[in-house]
Each structure stands twice: as structure tokens, then as C-alpha cells.
Length: 610
Image (cartoon, rainbow, N blue to C red; front, side):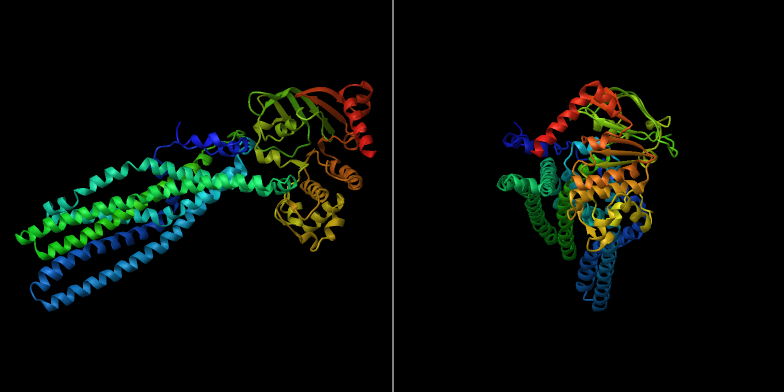
């Protein structure tokens, strides 16, 4: 059994779920992947031109200095006892060092600016693409796994763009220049000192696959830790309520230990480049002094040439070392870029047609025609649903858990596409119109209301950012949220954290009603929107709902009789099929499933009252 699969043997079901999203991405290391990354730097090619010029000038000065030292300073000036020439050569060398320093400073400063801009663009592109993906993408991935792609994996590419690419160019130019100079000055000695380079590359090549896989494992383990952290923070109340802190700590320790071991392995493999290069460098220097001394003694070369060779060899192995480090950095970047591009390559299941039209302002006439719907393309959640909802009509959906109530909402909002059949709004097939024009005319109030970080005012204004403060307050008053808002420390400007932790469940739902009312949709969906509201608040909500539903097509999912009894049409669902429909009194007279549901609710209320 492979080492990669071995840890799975020791995992419980919870661990396997977290690990299932982040399996090893088996893509070979190739320059096509690098080419794709470099496309993000192309918009800044004008800013890159002076950086490349500075890089070339800096490299030329670096390879020129040893030649001046060996030939001009030693062989001509010192050997010829020419003091004025020595002073002149020294001044030129000093000027070249200053020029090299200036070019390096310019290159580093401006490449950092360009690199940060590229990282900004890449992160923005990834986030924008994630926003366009369908619900199925999020259904099968933990939130932390998505988070780590936008943060850690993008950050891992930062060094590549800010310094890595230019350093690669610098080192390649320097190596090419040194090789040309050494072979030109003395081909035999130049060939002798570089004979170890192919051996070094052959040995190091065998490490490449192991290092690439090792850094992939590091990225995956970090992603899993982020997923677990996100889950732990979101579910801390449940963890403490069931006294599972120690189990959660042990769970985290196992994941943290895997991450620790994977990092150590990747780091150890990275460090293996150093000894290989040091040994190869030592052998090259030994060849230089043995063979070079022989050539100098036989006067085949001058002392200046030997010094020049020694300087160039020192300058030769320095970029070789950096290239080894650069290769490790490149592998880290490849491991991260593969994970980033995996998301960017993900295509939404719900796609907007290229010729999709804008859905004009609607009246709210909804028709389901033989709609078949499935989440996994295996088991149908809806089976040949035929349903008509007239403009301004209120429809209640009732049924046991899993009967298909939420699936009707998901299909209507086009969060998922239907397998067959079609859904019409005012005669338009929802697959023929743009998603923005469709969803902008539909508002959904959920049982688990999400409150964003920001002010109360911003949360109410979320669906309609251009609404005035007066309109925000008017919406809050209409749903009886104004009274509790003004009692908050800063009123409408009170800051609330993620999920509205400073607000009660009922208050959060009142805000969601205000948010929906302000958006002024023609189709309003209430998905168990009053399930967590106390009786006193519900009385206020009932009055607010009459305002909210007036003149709108509404679809209501609720179990409370008070919420659904006044609906124009009540649809009873079972296993994805409509088995009954009609008004409350009509369905009660039928003595069918609906009556059984209502009587069961009354029995439950009576038992709890006792």
C-alpha cells in the first residue's frame, strides 16, 4: 500500500470527510503550468521592461568585474608595475560595483511592486470565480478548504512573483555569461571545472518528484487544519454543550501532527540540495587548483587568468545554489498553483447561456411544467412537478422532512438546474434569462438568518445598497424591528459581528424580514422563516407579513398553522410529488395527509402545554 494512502487507515469517518476534498493532485511538473502563472504578469509588461534592463545591466557588470581584476589589474597593471593603470582599473571596478548596487535596488523595489499587484489580481480572480460557482461546489467542500486556497496558497506564490522570476533570469544570465567567458579564455580549463555540473543535475533531478509531492502534502494538510478550525469555531457551542472539548483537541492534535511530519519531510528534502551543490562545488574547485596550477606552472595561462577563473567559479556556484533554492521555491509554488487552478478550472453547474436575456420587471406568475430535479443525478428530489402560482398569490409548501419543499425553492431560484421539464416566470424559461436579473427579483428569508459583519443599517440594506436611511428605517418599522434597533447602543449604526452574535434569534429574523421588504421583490420565499420566533414576536410578525406579502407572489415553507392557514393554496408534498393541494378548509375536509400533519402539530402543542 502506498505511503499516501496509509494514513487513511487510521482515520475515523469525520477525518475522512475533511480529507476527501484534498486528495493529491497528480499533475506532472511542467513549464505549461508556469506559463499559465506568468499570464498574470503580462498586464504589467511595460513596467517590467525597465526592470529587465536593470537586470541585464546588473548582470553584465557582475560578469565584467572578475575579468577586469584578473586581466587588467593583475596581468597588465600589477605584472607591468603600471600604477596609473591600476588606479584607473580600480576606479572603474568601484564604479561598476556602485552601478550594480543601484541596478539591484531598482530591480528589487519595482519587482516587489509588480509582484504584489500580480498576487492581488490572482487572489481577486480566484475569489470572483468562487462567487460564480454553483451550490454543488460548496456542498462537497468544507469552508476552511476553500478559505486556504484564497489565503495560504495564494501567499505561497508571493515570493515567486516578487523575486523568484527575476532572480531566475539573473542567475541564468550570469551562468550563461560565466560559461561563455570561461570557455573563451581557456576551453580546456573551463570544461574541466564544469564537468561536475551535469552529474549534480542528474542526482538532483531524482529528488524532484519527491519534493513536489512532499510540498503538495504540506499544502493539503494545512488546508485540512483550516477546515477543522473553521468547523470548530462555528460549532463551539455544540462542542461545549456536549463536553467534547477533549475529543476536539485530540482530533486537532492528530491533524497537526500529520502537518508537522509532512512539513519536516518536505523541508528535509529541500535541504538535500545544499550538500549536493557543496560537494560538486568542492570537486570543481579542487579540479581548478590542481589543473589550473599545472597550466600556470607550464605558462599555459597567466596568474591573472587563474585568479579570474577562481573568481568566476565562486560566482558560478552562487547562482547554482540559488537555482537549487529557486527550484524548491518553484515546487512550492507549483503545489499551490495546482490547487488554485483546480478551483479556477471548476465550472459552475448552473451556467448562464451566452445569449441569455434580461428578465424584465415581473408580475410573479410562476409555472412548473413536469419538473424533475435531483441533487446527485441518482435519486430524484422532485418527480414531475406541475404547479402554477398566479401573480400575487401566496402558496404554502408542507410535508415531512425530505418531501421536496426546499428543492422547489432551489429549483425556482436556479441554485441548481432541473434534470427535465422547465420553470417559467411570466412566460420566460428561467434558463433563458440572466442569473442576476432572475435572482434580483426574488428574495429569500431563511430560518437560519445570516448576518454579515457591519452595522444593522448595512445588513438591512444588503439587498439594495442604494436605499436611503429613511427607506431602511421605514422597512424596519414595517416588520416591527425598529423598536429593538433603537434600544441598541448605537441604534442603526450598531456594529454586529459575523452571524449577528449580539442579536437574539428572533431579532436576526426580524432583520431578515426588513432586508427582504427593502429589496422589494416580486417573488418572496419564506423558508421556515418564523420557526425560531417566540409567540409574542410571532404576533408582530404576522402583521408584518401581511405588509410584506401584499402584492407579491409568495412561497412559504412552514410548519406552524398560523403561518400557512391563510395561504391561497397549500401544496402537500411527499417524496418529491404533490399529493394534495387546496386551501386550508378544503384540505381539512379531505381528511388526508394535510389533516394528519395539522392534528399531529396540535397533539405536540397540547403535550408541551402540559
